[in-house]
Image (cartoon, rainbow, N blue to C red; front, side, top):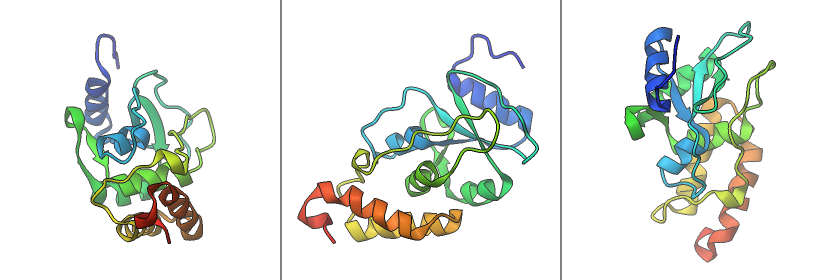
Length: 166
């Protein structure tokens, strides 16, 4: 497939048609679009379905393709919404869990940005308990280590003052 002259969103849409499967914006791209971080990712991080036997993905500067298996996609497809440029964007709690707990698959694949707890800024109307609940629910659905997520959320909340302290 020739991507010359196409922007990142056009490339993703073309690949969706070619693969016959939706692709999902993840990582900092998703977190920024939902207002959960001020870290603006200038490059789309896009989850692409792969099998364990896959050995390569298109190598590009923008977007960056990150592999995810069928089980991940089965969960993620129930937790997406339209984002910038009409692309599917992962729910921010799921994007956070994915970014901090998914190890890259073997091979030459890149992984998404891994935010430090102080990079995360949930929307002002979200309480500490709502944030924790959203992240833990996403973690359970994605099979992440819930104890690790609790520690991460507590560290993220430490910068928000008394309304966020445990």
